[in-house]
Length: 400
Ligand code: PMP
Image (tube, rainbow, N blue to C red; front, side, top):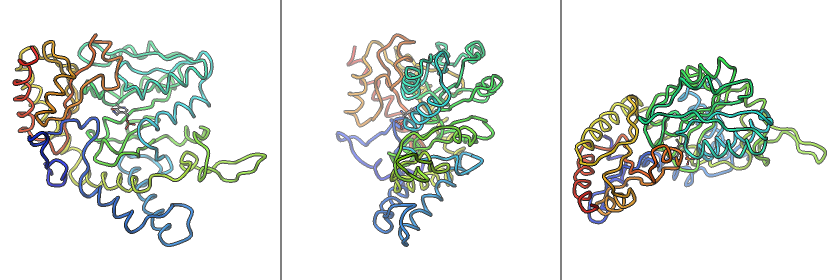
């Protein structure tokens, strides 16, 4: 669907039509997003919030309009709860550093899950090391289902935060956030949600969900690289110290003491990625025009079709068999190394991801070095799934 809006898809790779199935790493960008960004540079470029001139005012207005657009898109109560960052990784690092400094003390605990991306593990390890706190881990079972019934037993009076992914980028599992958040909140513990793999596939309402922080990247939702969002509830962001110092995040700077700007500017030091923020706004327009439900339905069809076809292949092992998944399927075939499978698929024009997908604990769980991962977006087709299956049928015998 809507392939004509994505010119990049119309090309040959090694004399084969490109089949792009690496959407969980990054989605392609529709023309409208690229044009929004080039239009900004061609006609409006200027630094925001500072200049008392026409272009600066226009750029500032458009940048702030996207903040309100994001607020509505994710159902936040206030636009000042939307902080623009470089992406999910920076959003999580911001909270780990700032929340960690304010609320984590020696002997405290942070809970993450076994299926987290490294970017929702390492920032917490760093924060725990700095503060003398400890990381605890909620496991998943062999089907890739989080053992949420064990969460309550991990929580105690020392737990300061639960950080969990909405969707596993390796297993595709959609986690029961409502249940996780309810359990944590019963213990008065805030919850950070890594929405990197959720935002493009699941309609999100942060207030209905009740999460305290929600993080995502524009580039996984048809938008540009280099920009993302941290949503944080006002009551938390207000209590948290600045993450980086610099221009725009201050009220007054004196050598005997500096005061900080109000939300969200307290967390946006320096010149932001204005063109990218506008590109994010355009990506949200695209998703809303197509409809998040329509995107999800199309991807679910592709996932079901691909899973059924893959299961027909001899020696196929699929990792992640939760009943509720998004459009990610990770697999290994026979004894073939995932890297070899990926390389041969590439020679046939098929782009997949191979390796540990920045989730080494998931690989350790299964005792494997990595997987091959195919992931789908709105523009993928059943014919492309057929191409993948045909290619695998050719490749697998070659790899013994
Ligand atoms: N969390 C998850 C679940 C992801 O899939 C990714 C990207 N692979 C990230 C976090 C990090 O996102 P980014 O690299 O855009 O900061």
